[in-house]
Length: 193
Image 1: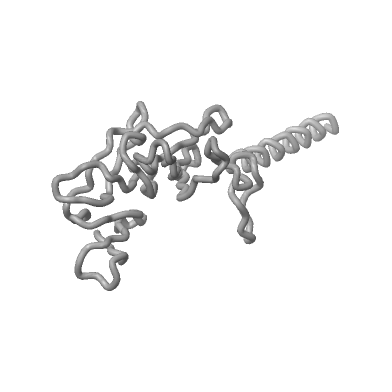
Image 2: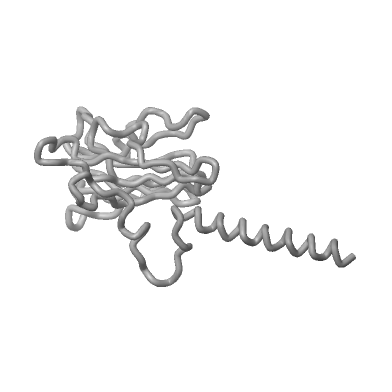
């Protein structure tokens, strides 16, 4: 009986250790967040070859297996595109990356956000559109092999001005910032259903 209890305690100890390790791995090896604000990954997540910190606007998938962030990539020698979206993926409990997202790199892409179910990812891009001169909202759909090609969110959301920072609630309401005419100050929040 005592041998069985010791085996059970050893099993529980190992399980707790595994759970603790999993919690740490959820945050790229750092301790889970608390009430005090801290630099994510010590501020060293992505450093430009010239040493400048250029990453911002992070979004984790609801299942915790993918992370996307905006990266300022312009240099004096190569000013365009200005931004791209980069990603880390959790494979076999290890974070692999950063890599340029499959749908990014050719145009300036920024301001990434997941849908609550993790099946859509929204971002702003300067891809050419006949009725727009600024950033517009696009999205990609999760497929078995990765992410779809970017899809233009259409003129119900986008205007000839700029739209960025789209997020979706669990009730499927959308919220975004727009510079469209008729607002209060050029960078107003809008909601759609």
